[in-house]
Amino acid sequence: MQVKAALGKTITVAVTAALLSVGNLANAQRIDDQPSAGAMVADAVFARPAYFALSQVGALVYAATLPFTLLGGNAEQAAETLVITPLQGAFVRCLGCGGMPNEVSRLREGDGKRIQHFVMLSGGYSEMEASNIANRDESSDGANLGLYLGSHFALSDRSRFDVMLGVKQLADFEAEATSGDFTDTVRSYQIVTRFGRELGGTDLMFKLGMHAWQTDREYRSGDAGDFAGYDFFYGIGWDFVKTDGVRFGIDYTRYGLEDSGNDYKANIDTYDLNFSVMF
Image (cartoon, rainbow, N blue to C red; front, side):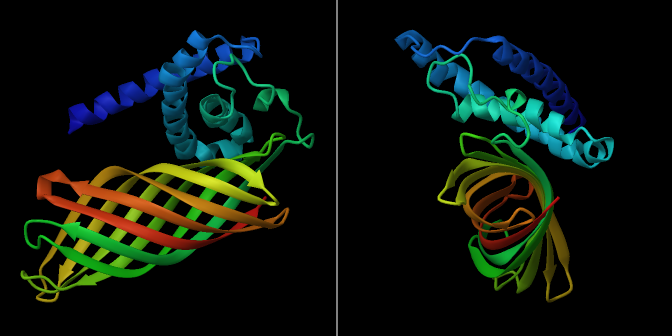
């Protein structure tokens, strides 16, 4: 486990350094309005997946340091370099183009560009399907509640980006099993990236993230157990901007949970309402 953790830290540092280099290179490249077929193929097969992977590592670094960069006053610059620039490289650039006319660093605040931080409260309904040695098939549902801190980027081409750090109690699931009735309390500590476009005054957003989760199981007999792991999740949402300081939204998210050491695997679907205060 220590070797795995050390390897993970090494990879994160190396990829973050590569991300900074790629960001600087992208800023220096000239935009090619008529890319060749070879450039398009190379972009689709190699460049875009690499940009996307770098954006997710950048999100990990950014979200983990967000409380400190907010206090230091450089959260916007960190998000631009670590997350937004590679996300634009993955999703906003024309296929085969070497740069973007709408790069964050080249836009001026207020000239089609808006950066806001926010606190978001999220809550709704969860459904779970899981299996383990004690009970091969279990399913249940319940309420969930989450709290997030993040940054929101609105750019002049109507692209939208969010980077968030949060914690969510996915639910208290009550289930009946051959080994005895039990309650699963599932908590999730999350790093989230959301990206999409403004459509008619609303924002259509796609979500990808990573979470550290823990399931505490309590049997009615008094016995207890727990499962834990690191996994990915994905989803889609629709945001409705009420005012410059308030945003509402709805989200669907699919969470994966797998603890191979305890032969535990679960999928959780959440349907949430979100309320954000922007600052």
